[in-house]
Image 1: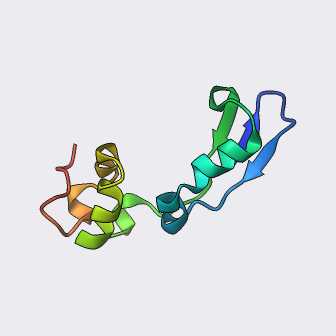
Image 2: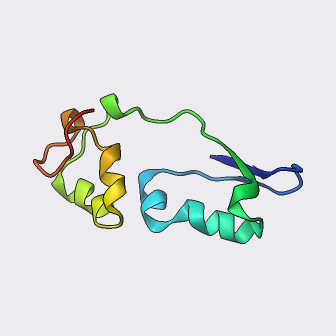
Image 3: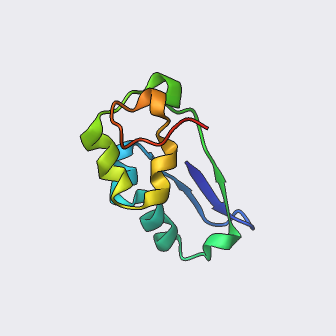
Length: 88
């Protein structure tokens, strides 16, 4: 993920794999940039797509317990647990 302020004077490049996302790497980076989040632009680079990445129950729960809204990132077809939300 590339982050930059509106004036392009503060930049960050963040590897946002699932371990870093779980530990809050994006929030920590934004805080370290010392720029109000609403003044940042973000670009998301190539990543693993949902339809190519299957997860198990512990993986799903690791994110779903942080914030219930995160569960929506796990389509039913890629999550081997009944706790996953249905596909939209």
